Amino acid sequence: MEQVRMDMLQEENHVTETCATQGKSLRRLKSLVTCCILGLCILAVFIVYLMVQGFMLYQELKGIYQVSDKAAVHPLSFKEMESDNYMAKPRAHLTGKKQLNYVSKVQTLQWENRHGLAFTEHGMHYTNQSLEIPKTGYYFVYSQVTFRLTANTAEKKGKIEHVSLTIKKITSKYPEPEELISGAKNVNEYESEGYRPIYLGALLFLEEKDQLIVEVSDIQMVDVTVEHKTFFGAFML
Image 1 (tube, rainbow, N blue to C red):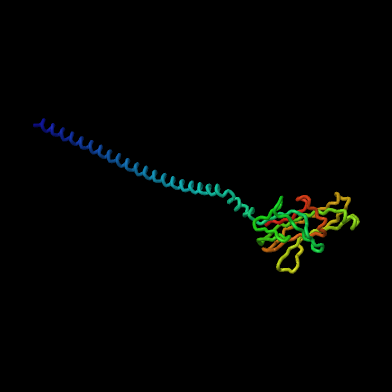
Image 2: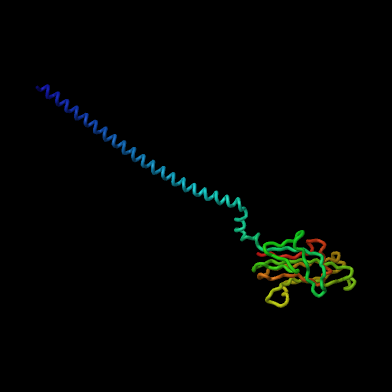
């Protein structure tokens, strides 16, 4: 009888140990499953974070490529903005030409505006011996006229001639042309082979529709044999 009790006690202890072992294993399994779930959650959050960052990077690169494509199509657009659209501002450079049908009392020079070094751009217009301003603003206006002492003028004036150059403005505000800048010199037959250049240049505020003309003391003495000797121009700043 005593032996039976001992066996029963041993069996009960065995069952208890088995249950305890199974409980520990179950708790370990639960802990492991919990850790796996937490790890998966963390991994999922990390993947979502990477996806969001990747999408943002894609948008930035897309914007950069779009700007690059625009720059490739319009290579001067950014340069024009940086330089305040300088290349599109009104400008003109006129060169001397043979003077035809001049009147002695009106010594306004005629100019070449198309051939050689001459040009008119971005609204600047040359007509009727005058350069017309297309836009109100500050302009640098310049002119050089080279005078030469001819045989006829030397005989008449004793081989010395007083010459002058004047840039004038024609505007609806004044009935007569307004003098802007002028200069004068003497031409001597024995000085620099009888040639004398006069150069004028100034920064002026001009209004739309203003017209600029160049007058000289004697058109017959103006040297137009070479483009760089006699010229006239203006450009907007």
